[in-house]
Image 1 (tube, rainbow, N blue to C red):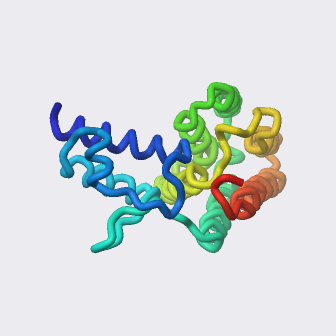
Image 2 (cartoon, rainbow, N blue to C red):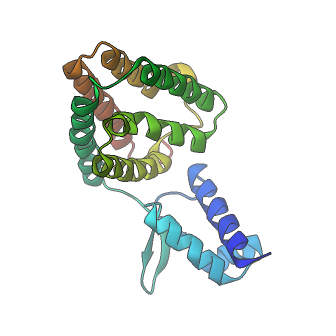
Length: 218
């Protein structure tokens, strides 16, 4: 098995363990333990740790090792409040450019998002969630705005992975899907103010939900 394949396996296994809450916020993850569990050398594991650090899922502390990230409520607030500003601006740029085909694509993404939740496919759910949030910036063809929104989406994904109860929340209690629909309905009406209010309400709803969880098991 080559080094790159080992890296992919180590990366996937560690990330999956974090997503399933088998590794929890603040927990130390050693190269020795992962190597023993996966029967591989430290080199691909170290590379996997670096990838996970870039995604915000683990923190590498010199002379101490790797720890599953434990974001503060302040960090959550900073990311989600900035997302409100950038995604609202994207709506202003895109709303009068959006076509019937764009709205059909958004409706399709909503259907795929619901299916991912029904299937309990977290990675697919996060991928579709990111596409929905970045869609107006993509339509606006502002590559710099799109890059920043995608970067913040990635940080938000790590917070969701660490704090969200995806696997135990029933579909009828999921807030993000109807909240996304409210944003899309406002876009269809070309009502920028309503769309921006829906974005802010959705972000604050998610933020409040994540911030209230002082324990990963709550």
